[in-house]
Length: 257
Image 1 (cartoon, rainbow, N blue to C red):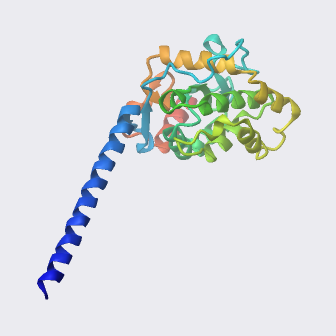
Image 2 (cartoon, rainbow, N blue to C red):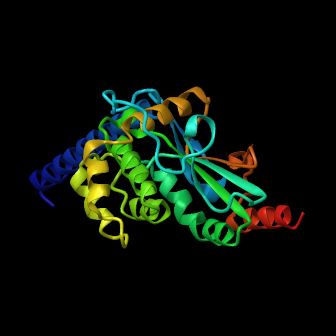
Image 3 (cartoon, rainbow, N blue to C red):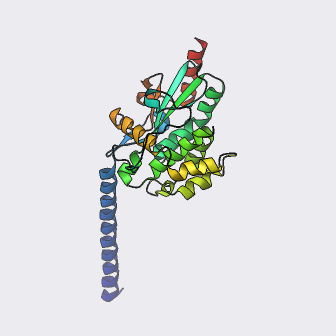
């Protein structure tokens, strides 16, 4: 091999090494930006990641207007949307954000078990809506999706629309839920939801003030992130062995007395 060829190959290797170092540096900067925007913690439930609210108090709906709660809202200040029978012996309290990837992971893992238990009258779920991703990533998607979900509650379609929102959740950095057109299009996937009353509620932001109040309650509650899940008041985040099967066993034991 000529000296010229050896020099050429050596130069190519050097250029490749430089490019690799540049890529490593770019990756390091990107990771630093992500960590700076939100701290992550390991969630025992289904081994998903919970996003901690670095700016949980910042809600995109700053001009939220009057507090108008959705139909049937319960709990302190009427901030909980109930699903299941009031007579159920166990209550699952869920704080969630429709833009939160960890919330979707929790829903995907536990949805069928929770539905089975609520349908059987053994479990009642109280959903509380938070907007921490709007605060961390910017935008209004968490807020607007929560308002739309509250509008769905008004017409008795909250559980169905709740599922549709999570199944069609955009990437965390994509604020697609900020667009009412997106939320209304997804309503078409729920039979009987896409009505003039629902559309007016979404477009006018009827429940925006209620969503803002719920977001403030999340911040004041001292919760570390979403989803926060409590069974009969006990934070089952802390149970690293929690699974859908274990949750079902606990609820059925309580139902049996």
